[in-house]
Amino acid sequence: MELRVEADPASVAIWVADQLLSYWRGPLQANPGTARPLGLATGRTMEPVYAVLVQRWKALTAEQRPAPSSWRSFNLDEYVGLAAGDGRSFQAFMHHHLRGPLGLDPACLQLPDGMAADPAQEASRYATAVAASGGIGLQLLGLGLNGHVGFNEPPCGPEARCRCLALSDSTRHQNAEAFGGDPEAVPSQAITLGLAEILEAQRILLVVTGKAKASVLRRLLEDPPGVDLPASWLRRHPDATVIADRAAAP
Image: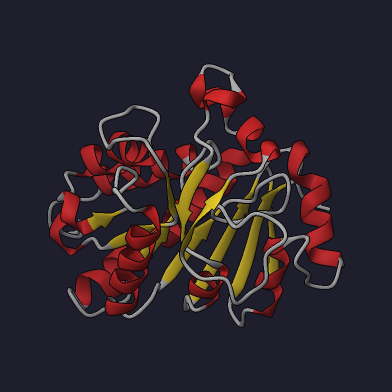
């Protein structure tokens, strides 16, 4: 696993956004329909990344821009019980930060259906869709304070696949800002890609910013992989990069 340290969150966002744009202008544009799709994440860490990506894309000339129709991506997760039109859903997050600004067709940017009648069946359908696309090409990840990636809560081994699961109290507290600061308002369940699908990606970028993430990132980099820190399994991946700012870096 490679560690890359940038000065601040803004510098991290620029570097990550450029990786996403290069993948879009490269494999996705050159091999529409056959290149492995992007794997995307949500959350505060990703907001500046997507803002820079939109800026970079808009700054290109019409000839330089990759066509919106060539975009293909799967998000990691979605809350159970939130409709796509709910402003707190990850569907709404992606529409606000990427789909709308880039003019993407909703079919090009896929997420689990949080309102599916049977969340377990929806997780199975979503896993099948990812597999049918060849798996993920470039997977973008954030890091939870308890070491989760996606919503793979500890304890979690590398064999875990896409599923519906219960969210931990710490994760609901961490995500409470989007729900008026009330952890009890955060849905208790989510559908998430598993560590197995994440580790099957061709390349992984783990984005970590802020002093609050320093201790968990240190554990990830120094401790042996284990179920108590799900993100630690990323160390087994042949092409995984941690991109952190100075505040988060060990």
